[in-house]
Image 1 (tube, rainbow, N blue to C red):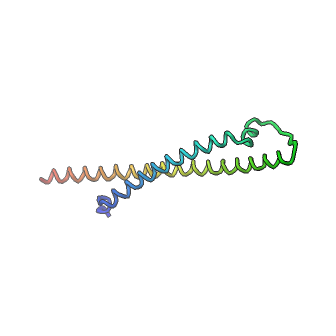
Image 2: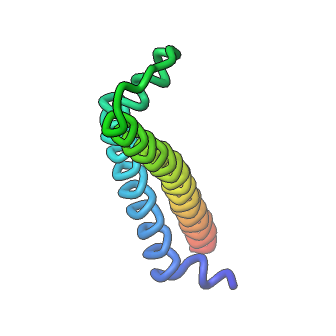
Image 3: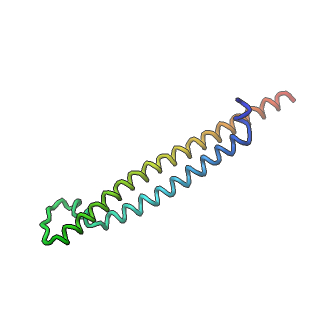
Length: 118
């Protein structure tokens, strides 16, 4: 088991975790920002933020508001999912980083033992 932690496979796995975590974090941060900007332009979100009640003048206006509210709900759901994905990306980045630190510690320890034996 200890040989696995010193192998090239372990190092590649940790590197992959760091890269995947970093990319996932960057992508989800980008998506959260773009979704938030889209959400700020949504008429249903603007009405919700203002807190005022609206009197609907026509059926077409009502349908438009319903469509905007459905879009707002989808955007809120997607933003929450991207926030979770960003957290997972940060967790993967942390695990990969800790694995690299563990690997470097093991290498330094083995180098000290080898130098003491010589």
